[in-house]
Amino acid sequence: MANPKILILHDYFLYKGGGERLVISLAKNLHADIATAFIGKDAFDPRAEGIHTIELYKEKAWSNLPGFRYLQVQFSFLFKTGFAKKYDIIIYSGDCLIALTRLRSKRNIAYMHTPPRHLYDTYQNRLTQYPLWKKIIFIPFVRLNRWRFETLSRRLDLIITNSKNTQERIKKYLGLESVVVYPPCDTLPFKNLGYGEYFFSWARLYDVKRVDKIVEAFVGMPDKKLVVASGGPELEKIKNLAKGHNNITILGWVSDEQLLEYLGKCLATIYIPIREDFGMSAVESMQAGKPVIGVAEGGLLEIIEDGKNGILLPPNFNTNNLREAVKNMTLEKAVQMEEFCQKTAQKFTEKTFIAEMKKAANLP
Image (cartoon, rainbow, N blue to C red; front, side):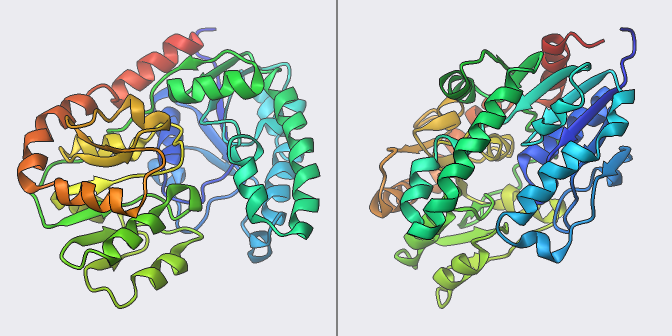
């Protein structure tokens, strides 16, 4: 097929995250269209990049209620994707495989960021946190959706994923093979703009990102400064934790220009998610020559080399471990790590990503 017509289905654009950057990069370089359930007001908008984008429904206030947004997204891909039959290749990103039920005759490829974590590796954690009435709803919900996701995944012609860590997760939970193509981490011109006195975090404010643990550590270190530039469900919780502590600044979402400025001028970054799929933020930090205080689990083990481009905390780290790492990340140490950080980042360029995607998917 000389010039196949390609459509990328992405579940939704809600935040300014790495997965959203990846989809936009892929669409631009493959001359593909995008279809998504909705585009939130705080999200990247592929239309701003000149990409033909189909929004399946407009986000409504009531879609923020628990369960309603999930149902709207699934129903939109099930019932509103008839137009996709005019495309030759469908690339799936996020939880939108339900569209496969009407697009089985197409060439179906998934860039699987991870099997949905609430269905698999974080399931037990969530279950222990829920009261009885939520458990009664959650357990059958998970069983049904595991069946759905596994059945649809077996219909795919090819699964591409973002790391060896996620590749192992796909094999463990789905019993399927996949090809690793690392994400593009140079989609913004991150540069070292010098070294300020503050540490920087811009992970989305979800429980699995553990930004609350970072803030708690700095609450007990009034002589160390922290800047948090992101949003998410835990924003108010994070703001309350930081209240009254002048060494901690919570900015909420910032523009790309502000992100480049804050990252470019920080001393180092902190990124400690639970078993992260890959860790684009860590690579973006290194592109700016800034070392990362991370955690020795998940995809970060494929990026951070302890003592060379960052500091790795043990998987079962505590607040004191994090404080010790912050105190050990001196200006001298950060400067020494700059060259190796930038060398690491060169492995994860957009050029390499597109070349590897075309090779894996046998695209012209």
